[in-house]
Every structure is written in structure tokens, then in C-alpha cells.
Image 1 (tube, helix red, strand yellow):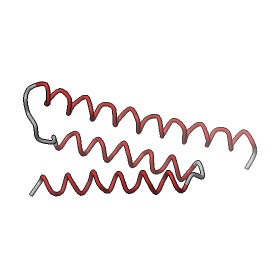
Image 2 (tube, rainbow, N blue to C red; image 1 turned 90 degrees about the vertical axis):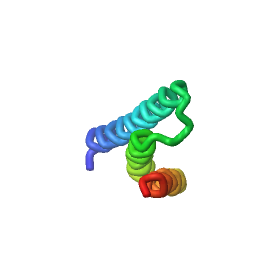
Image 3 (tube, rainbow, N blue to C red; image 1 turned 180 degrees about the horizontal axis):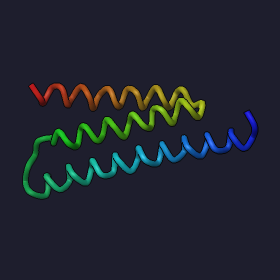
Image 4 (cartoon, rainbow, N blue to C red; image 1 turned 180 degrees about the vertical axis):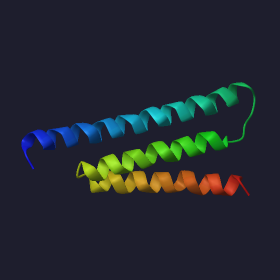
Amino acid sequence: MSSAHGALYLHAYIMLGRSGLLIIIVAWLIQLNYSWKGRKELQPAFLVLQALGIFLLVISSFANGDAFLGFLNLLSGAGAVWVYLKIKK
């Protein structure tokens, strides 16, 4: 692979990580909006967006060669999915 292709892939994975963080921020804004309205429960949309954003961080971490961070993000994402499944029962 040429260095130009390598740089392009690196840029794409960085953008993937940034997109994941932006999705997580949107998830928190949704949850915060419900909290301001006095609702205390976790919103399913929050958990779904949280898991999606974390999934993008997992891909970005592993693609950038940071397996440890990828594994930590994977655990975090699994936690969000687990909580979502528990509240949907």
C-alpha cells in the first residue's frame, strides 16, 4: 500500500472515531433533555445511540492499531447494549 493510501485510510478511521464521539454527544443531549423534563429513566434512544457511537469507536481503535482501547470501548458498548436489553423487558 502506498503512503498516500495509508494516509487516506488513517484519515477515514480518524473521521470514524470523531463520528462516533459526535453520536455519543447527541445521545447525551437526548438523555439530558428528558432529565430536564423531570424524567429519571434511561431513554432507549440514548442507549441505542450510545452503543452505535461506541461501536464506531471500537472500529476506529482497532483500525488504528490500539487493541487495548478497542477492547475497552467494546466492553463499554456491551454495557450499553446490556442495559438497553434489560430496560426493554
